[in-house]
Image (tube, rainbow, N blue to C red; front, side):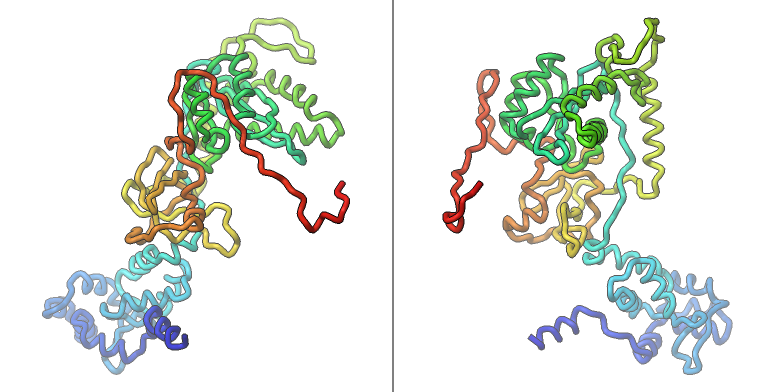
Length: 465
C-alpha cells in the first residue's frame, strides 16, 4: 500500500522546480539566449535573427525589454523580481501554481508573484478549464436570458397546471391557470395519481371547455400512459416543460405562492381554509392583473363579476390587452436579464458536458464527474446522453466538460440515480408505461396495488391505539 501511495504521489503531482533546472533549460532555449545577448549588447534586431529563435515569443518579450535584466551568472533572465521561465518548463510552472486547485484569480496571482513568460494568463486559463476536478467542484450560477412566451389568441386556449399541498396537512390541490386571462381554478384532489387527477380535470374541462394546450411539469400523474390516453381522447396537446425548471411554468408557480399565503393566513386566524379559499379566489379574479391591467374574470367571460364591494355600472374603456401584456413582459425581461450571471449558453450539439447534481449532500461536488454528450437542443432545453440513456434539463444545469465520455462502462442503478438518468423524462419522451391503442374513450384508470400491512413481531405484546 505504501509503495502504491508513493507511486501515485510521484506520478500525479508535478515535481518542484529548482534553479538548476531553470539554468539548464534557459541554456538550451535559443529564444532566451538571444534575449540575454540583446540585453547585454542592446542589439535586439541582430539577436532576433539568430538561428532557432521563436520570433513571435521574442517580439512579446521585446515589448517589456525595459523591465528585463540578467543575473550575475548570466543564465537567468528577470523581469523585475520574477524569473522568466523557458518554454520547456512553462507548462510545469502552471501545474505547480495550480496544485491545490485554487481558482483562476488565485492561481494567476501566485504564478505572477514568482515567475513570468509571455502568454502566462492564457496558459493558466487553459489549464483550469481543462482540469476535470476543478470543473466538477466549481458551482455555476449562470442562466440564459428569459424567453418570454407569446400571449395566446383567446381565453382558455392554453392552460398551465400545478399541484400544491395545504401547509401542515396532507391535502393536495390542483391549480389551473389560463395563460390568456390569468383566470385560475383551484380544486382539491385526494392524491397525485392519474386516477384521482383525471376526474377533477375532466370536471373543469366540462365547465370551461377543452383547451388546445395543457402545460404541466413532468411529475405524476402527467408522465403516465393514462394521462396520455386522456389527452388524446379529449383532443388537447399535452406540453411538458423542461424537467426541474419551474421558470418554464412561472405563471402557475407564482400563483402557488399566493394561494399558499392565503391558506396559511386562514389557518393562522383559526378559520376554515377551504371556505376562505373561495373568498380569496373571488377577489383575485376581480382584481386587475399586473400584466394585462384587466381583471382575469373580465377577460375570461367578457364581463365584470360582482364582489362584496359596492360598484356603479359604467362602460369600461377598451384596453389593448396584447400590447399591455407585451410591454409588461418586456419590462420583466429587462429587469431579470440585467444580472451579471445572465448570458447565452455556448453549449452545442455533440459537445461533452457535465450535469449539475440534484439534491446533493454538502460533501458532494456540485457537478457529477461523469460526462455526457449533447444530442438535442431546443432553445434553453438541452438533452444529453450517457450510458445509453438520455436526460433533459435547462441549459443552466450543464457546463462544458474538458473530456469526452469515452469507453464508459455499463451503469449500475446507483450510477443512474447519481446522473438522474431514469428520473423526470424529457418533454418529448414517451410515457413510461405502454400506451394501448384503442378507439377514443375515457380510459379506466387503475390505482396502485396496495401492499399487505402487518404488525411487526416486536409489537405483538403491546396494545396499539
